[in-house]
Image (cartoon, rainbow, N blue to C red; front, top):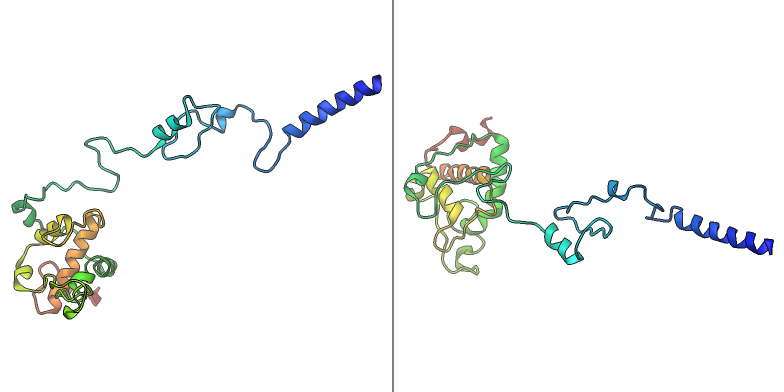
Length: 211
């Protein structure tokens, strides 16, 4: 009888020992689980720990999902554009506030190639891949940005067009941030200078290797 009792006690101890030892991703029993699993809802974290959260798993998913920003707030690193799509007078009068450097020029060239070149072409004359000398998928030639009309246009007009788009051209405010838009304006000025236009901002854009 004593042997059976000892065997039973030993079996119970071994059972609990096996349950409390480290096993793969489970470290056994947790001391103060709140230290490892926060009670608060973690934004955009898909981890419903049932011991610490109240409500159903669907409740947790709702509270942890991404939310719209509070009214009147601006994301870190972003800037508020004060002009609406129809407010062109003041917007067109803006001057390019971004100082162009060699690194900035290289970035501007890249951005133009990705977002603008497919329509306006490498030289900004409107003969991009979409038009392709009339053989491309887009039948109407995009605007030639080296025309006197666009050379005479203020920096703000080009920026405003990038921001909101015009006619067949869509808005790029969700694709280029503020600095990138101004860099693209710089590069358009550079391409205009290659066609004989006088640089309107900095002589550097006519000769990017000068610095």
